[in-house]
Image (cartoon, rainbow over all chains, first blue to last red; front, side):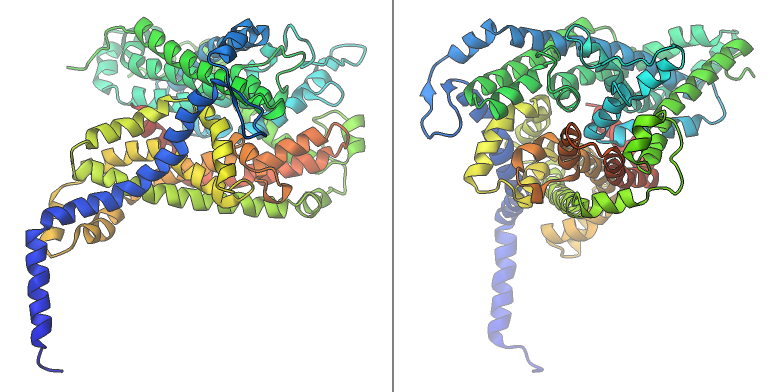
Length: 317
Length: 281
């Protein structure tokens, strides 16, 4: 087959003209092939369910029967009359406040200590402190349940060392205080992530600033206040908003694993109550309405927080 | 030059705090291992920090593996994690490449749409997702979980990779095009290999998230045959109320923790860079 068939030459020419002539079409074909599959996924598994949630919230629906009853805003009215919903919102904000304060204080302290204090073993500490962040919330919940366990738990056994009689406090059994018991695991599990963020921000600060301040004889505390804090403030803001959002949207998992919202609905957060109403009591319309509440609450909270924290960010000239 | 803390008392105090926190992180892991080797009697009679009695009960591991079917759950978790990470990676990489290099009418809007989906609480979609998957007959199917997990990674993946592709020099593609490569060829032969560091970072962060994911797993999977590890751990914990087998429970926790710890130790730096990349919004 030494000679090329005339037809193949013709075909090649045709392809060549098509290539140059329709480079644009090819470009769009490429764009479509590369973006449409992902976009289809995104529409089906993200956009559609979100819109559908808004729609469901207007119906009374047990989920099992085909017919849903349109009830307008009745789910929302019922929601605002339900004291557990209000308690959930309160608990959510309690966890947000507790986590923001606890995590930011400790994460900032650790970040400064592991960068500016020049301790030996800094790298080791940093690796250790991040470990809770790679462990499943479910595992963390089980571990802390064991710490709080009244009979064989760690906390009671530890306290028993100092008392004559064996301590048998049911740490997760008091309606008035149990929500406090959920803060330590939430803070413990969250610190590493934000510590890494703030460490990265501190490492971006030019060392010349610290050197100049060293020469003036400034101590660690004054360096922290005049250099570190202003220059990592942007990262602190991002972290606070991130903690707030992830808590409002995701704190229910640790609640669900540790207390299922109990005792007596006292530790219910919006997410766990939504889960309970929808998947345990089959009020899917009411559940969807709580979902909408979560969306609204977290959007408003984020916007308000951003407003409140709008302070001049210092740009390095 | 002055280094670190001058006041020796403060220095000791700070060191003590750091050590204390390290202990609070590591100790629960150590005691998970110790408790996985105990029987019920030791749980109820001895202090939680006591060492397990000899001979060690290695049987607990075999017991959860076979009797609680952790062999199956481990494989389920592995399949779902690997499958959805790969699928999510290829879909977000292709989209990110086009958004970074092939601007078209509406591409800015599309980017914004993906990124702003990070603001919407995923829990909102939970109820409709259940009925959607039900109507696709994808409840209790690993493939259903894979599809949902894959699309849950888009926002983060696209955000990081668009930045990554934009940072690569344009000359590389141009010379590839001059050599006669197609758009597809350029992407798969030139750009994808170059973006490996970014892809690996995203893959690791996603692997950790999906391996640990609980709530979508528990909603889309009701069939005990198809549980993932976190779903089974939660179920097992509930069962402890009437069937106390603490040793096996801790052994089960270890099957969940050890793989992520290995990934973490191997890819520490990648994880840190993934976090910083994702959070600077």
